[in-house]
Image 1 (cartoon, rainbow, N blue to C red):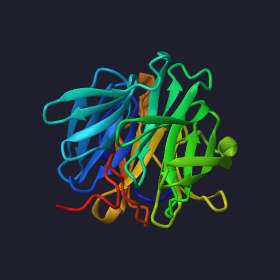
Image 2: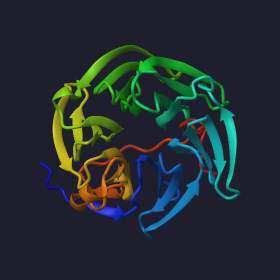
Image 3: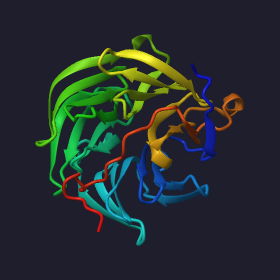
Length: 301
């Protein structure tokens, strides 16, 4: 495969572009530059990209109402009001672990925010996976994580998929959507034979997983039932970090990338590393869920 036409849509030159999520109402792509200590809101139709500097590592962003987001940062979960540019700390599950930071995260269909941590220097498997409930209480649901990364749920919400980049594994859990609980962890895909490390992940409307390869120059599509790789799309940056479906009818796959560790002399063969790319893979995606807004309760006013 790999012949699909991947286009640069934003030459962001992010140090560590990550964690994209699509806001259907705003037709906007939210994403973070973790090491740039900011999150951004990008409008593909106009090419406009707004930056919101937070002043500490921002691992993930999820929408929470019209002008608000919830962030998973180095110092825990925080709420941010974009109009007022105000940051409000919510809860820090790892206040006692200053050497850790939050990394990737995502909301489930009930509006809970799942996000995991990692050691900043990436030596020990000192991270954990947490759930921020819509009332701002939290639970630790899994531990012994190296680099907590991509999360996705099966279309019937009976399984959750989860990536530990350090261990090069994509795990599957049984998922109880009502209680927001996971059980029976098992290895779904072992990336040992793949190029690079599994990083961010999303799921399409056919229930197939799309995984970004850190240091692998690609995003790949997998069947979670068989664990088989179905196809791969080449990305003109070595460090593809994550992907999410957006655009008209969710037919566009947006891909975030990183420049981290790229020496100036290496930038020649990937001048747009750290940019956001887009491709129409021929399959549609699933919607991004917002924090606190479940299927059942959120009605268009």
